[in-house]
Image 1 (cartoon, rainbow, N blue to C red):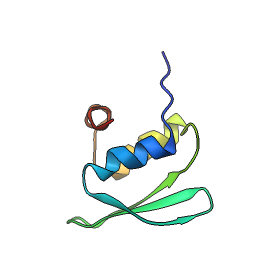
Image 2: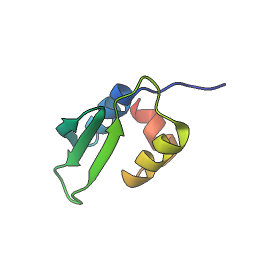
Image 3: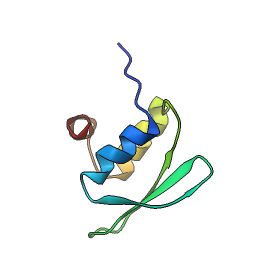
Image 4: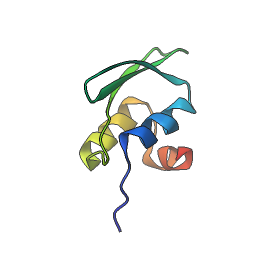
Length: 72
């Protein structure tokens, strides 16, 4: 079973743990974490985020896949 997760869904999930939209350039949304540690993430604003890209975003956010799924 494959689950399609859009860029907007990723942004909404990450906003629950303190990420805010900093800016957007084209189809890439740049998020920043206001609390420590200060991190920046780039999320593609696509209808479906590729699974490798999604896994990289989850790792950069310091989450496990299970933790990310709970945020959805």
